[in-house]
Figure 1 (cartoon, one colour):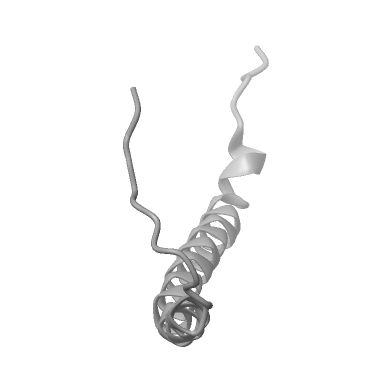
Figure 2 (cartoon, rainbow, N blue to C red):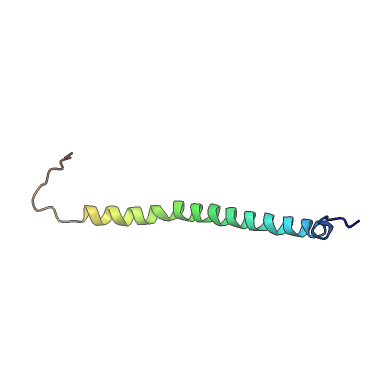
Length: 68
């Protein structure tokens, strides 16, 4: 009687687990590093944006309004 087991896959299980954990760790490290990069990078662009807004000529005063 022939057994239908997946014993051949059992030998690959530790290797597939390590590859899967490497991919998950790589994904999270890219996410964390990009989050830190964008968090630190917004300070320099925020100052440049503020400088351009402050340096803009203000010939006529304008009032802001909200319409629904």
